[in-house]
Image 1 (cartoon, rainbow, N blue to C red):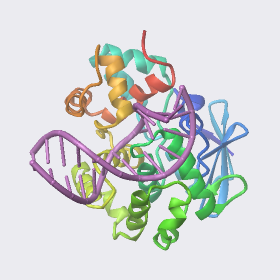
Image 2 (image 1 turned 90 degrees about the horizontal axis):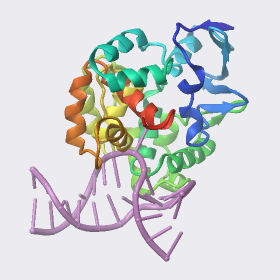
Image 3 (image 1 turned 180 degrees about the vertical axis):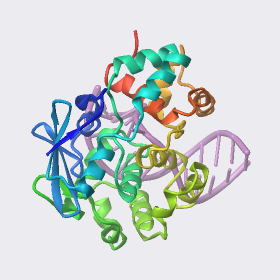
Image 4 (image 1 turned 60 degrees about the vertical axis):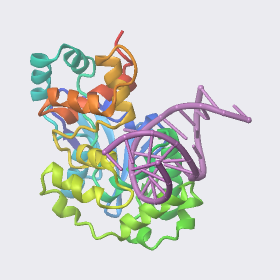
Length: 278
DNA sequence: ACCCAGGCATTGG
DNA sequence: CCAATGCATGGG
């Protein structure tokens, strides 16, 4: 079934995240399309003129696909904002025309994914996470359903350390799965209250909470100032010397209100998708 | 054989 | 309040 996507839209750059750092078995790039298990069915998304082809497609799947393809972002408003306020950003928006950051559809998966990415390289994180998904998730046709909260709540730490988790991260993930976190409630709370609730869980720090706001809740003003990649991007596009401090990046973020989330993604995209400006 | 990579909790001053 | 430390793997 064809699903139209408003212009500008660039499928290749918008799905780059699923390819660059290695396979993600729960969001798997396979033979030119993106595969994910939704409910008990495996969905395939591929590029088509003016939009994407999605098989199969119903209302539930359309909602997930909309997240994966970043449909809720208002690129037109962002483009106008960039043009009016910031030459460097305006140029990035032009170079990355049609890039829509993917939104991670599931809150628990988002948090576990962030835990795997804490401190280590994304290549390591992808490898470790995919081993966990393969062992503890449910296999679809080619992709896997991410391990459920129930499955991880019942996991032994050894099952995760065998996949390459540190002992500490294994405790974080199992503790998170067992924690009494109301994910539906988080959607209704303002950014600062979401962060406060998440940071109260062992293993979830400010960096993880900021990316949850940005990548799962799609909050416009989310700005992961502590992110190493973002700090490098800020150095590349706004600095001229050493890596800026977290506080410096935080202060710079105010300049991009209320589009910090899209700005962060475009700055990172500037590093990873087209290389730093010359 | 190093060293760093999209952090975090813990411990000690 | 802030500095130092350990963590486990992948890639250079």
